[in-house]
Image 1 (cartoon, rainbow, N blue to C red):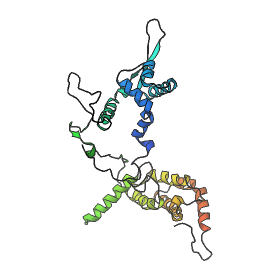
Image 2: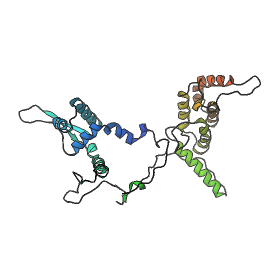
Image 3: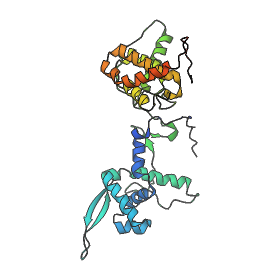
Image 4: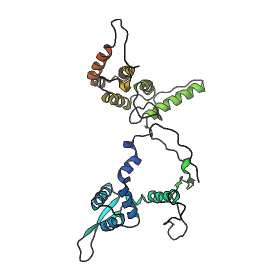
Amino acid sequence: MLQMSQIPLARRSPIPPENCNLARTIEIVGDRWTLLILRAALYGVRRFDDFQAELGCPRTVLSGRLKILVDAGLLTKKTYKVPGKRARPEYVLSSMGMSLRPILIGLTQWGDVWLGKGEPPPISFTKAGSKTAIRAAFVDPEGREVRPDQIRAVLQIRDIPYLGSFRSNDERLNKIWEVGAWTVHLNMQDYLWDGIKRDRLVWLGDMHPEVAVINSVFGYNPVVPESLDLIRDVTPVSEWMNGISSYSMWWIIIHEDWYLYHGNLEYLQEQKVYLTDLIRRLAAFVTVEGKENLNGM
């Protein structure tokens, strides 16, 4: 059996669930009853009573799950009428729902391997007009199969030009600059992350050198004010940003740098209330001799 390579340790997934299409898919189809309904629909079950008889699902639950699948576009609600009886709805897989067939077949075959206890699978899948079994697999554009351990996730990055540049006669320095600029580019996601693989948090100490790179390489980018506003909104003035007193100071310094580079006085004025209260709090930790006596780092 194929031994997949160990996935490297990560503190968080590369993108937050609210921006992940896998997470969005799970929101719709991740429920047990929902998957069982889709499984039955894959085999041609369409009518409410047939779903209920096969699955043993409470009628109220079944009604709710069918409505969710119709609203999400995976099932299409149509009317049928048996002679002598009133018209009733049936639920047919839409094109969107039919496109789940490879996923459901893949899940079936996963169950055959890991849950089948070595027994022949109760159902298999073949190409139409043939008795040759097929299986779900990943393929590249040329049709070559790609093993699961060969798959790599590629993170989407912002499509932004490099306005600044650096070049010297030392190739090592050139490479250091390129790697640094690229790393900050990767960190520019929904917010300015402190590390592309470490976590998805706005850390003010790390943000200061990142903003310096953005100013020099990319110019103005809304990810900076959005990140500054995020950490401000989640941190009352009575607390330190990221739990570290000096990080609240970095917030002030970054605002100064951002204003000096871009001259957006209106944005700076939006910070007036918080900034004034924060400076007053910091001033309370300065002794009469002019020395700081801060709690925290």
